[in-house]
Image (cartoon, rainbow, N blue to C red):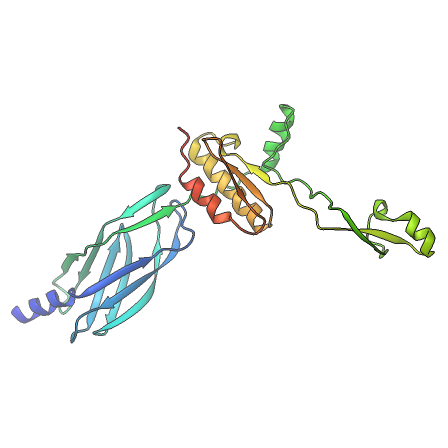
Length: 251
């Protein structure tokens, strides 16, 4: 019994762990993290260890001595905003199955939980804004045309309003105006104007719009509770807006 007790105690010694959270981790939704595990013992491997972080579990079958491994780790946490993880426990049945040994390790990781996206019908916002006589700025507008840069051949797909009639008469062939790329007006996303009945629902709807318009490459502006506006250029800045939604304070 003395030998099995010594082996079991030693099995949980010398482990060093670091959690690498995913870039996007949403409130109460699963995300795939990575666990970096190092066995710092010089001679003895680690066998059959169960790991628990705030109710999220992983099984570590074997780590050789003086070796580091990475494993995928399913992570799901509840609560929007900054979350401090301090609880990490280990348990093992090694070397005999009817003895279970437990150990808590010093552990501290701070994560940012984003609002869980909540799909909704943006057309509802359009109808409500129309009833108030307002323009629904949380809906995308068509891009404005830039300045005319040159004249090109008519391919048949251009709208008639782009035909350059004077150039066409001179060249005896249809010519069209060619414009510089236009810039779309930023889509304003204001959580206070979302149709949800409570703050967390409205923040989830705002997060859904940020992801939707971010994937479409549209420029966006997020209005915070303070009235400050944060911009995100087309194709970038989406995670910055989501992080500010995670820390949104309506007070």
